[in-house]
Amino acid sequence: MSPTFASLAVRNYRIFASGSVVSNVGTWMGRVGQDWLVLTQLTDHSASALGIVTGLQFLPFLLMAPVTGMIADRFSKRHILMTTQSFLGLSALALAALTLTGHVELWHVYLIALLQGVATAVDNPARQSFVSEMVSKDRLANAVALNSASFNAGRLVGPGLAGLVIAALGTGWALLVNGLSFGFVLASLLAMRVRDLTPAPRARGERQIRQGLAYVRSRPDVLLVLALVFVLGTFGMNFQITTALMATQEFHEGPTEYGMLGSIMAIGSLAGALLAARRKTPRLRCCSSRWPASPSRRLSARWRPPTRCSRSPWSPSASPRSPP
Image 1 (tube, one colour):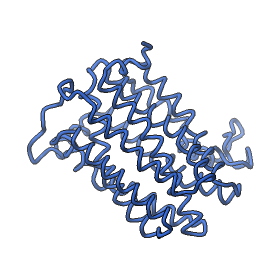
Image 2: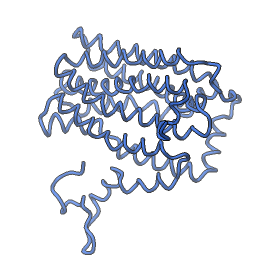
Image 3: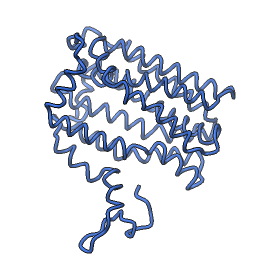
Image 4: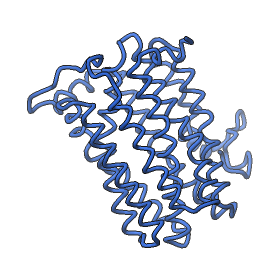
């Protein structure tokens, strides 16, 4: 087997990865369907409403991250995932039912977005750390990279497929597919051989969060990674809002074109994840070297005054077009 896919030789991880890739496709279909629902059916292309929905989805991450990490340390990660995936699937089906029956209102979307944000904030630490229970330490970096590849494969296929479904059948059907896709993750969790898992010792005590913060402060490499994630997450990950508004207001296109726009953005991310999967160990230099190519770096370069010696390709005088 190719080194890129070495972790797929492990039965439990192979089953989990198969369910996850289907669910990731459904998740991205749900995101496109939700944005299209808010922009074209519940509002008159309101950027504020779309921003509120996106904010409600991610606000729980900011507020609950230390607590949800502690939950993942204290309880069975497999059981946590079964609970969160069940809730996410049921909430997605509820939004699909409201949309298909014509009873959906904007506050419904707000409420479901917030509830899904809370569930995802609990789900993510358990999902990411669950990988270490399925594969050995020498395959851990590969498995983590393949998880990223699965996410970006869903991001590549899901938006385009959602656009086609919305154009042919309607927004509610794309949301319905998202709800049903969570069943694949649940099936993969149930199909695992529990005896082959190697769970870490359950953490106990009341000072877990304080100990975690102290550990982060003692590791400059971890602090650098967190700083990069903060900058990229703050300035470079707003495409969910900007691409929706560009497709509908700037280019005046329909759901098919909007979906394709989202899919095209995933090509580079998927390629990078597969390249990372070939490395046996992650390197900090690779993280820092990607900064010049990041969207936030290009944004800062766009507004940097040009000099006589060098001109930024994204400076206002270099080109009237916005950076991709």
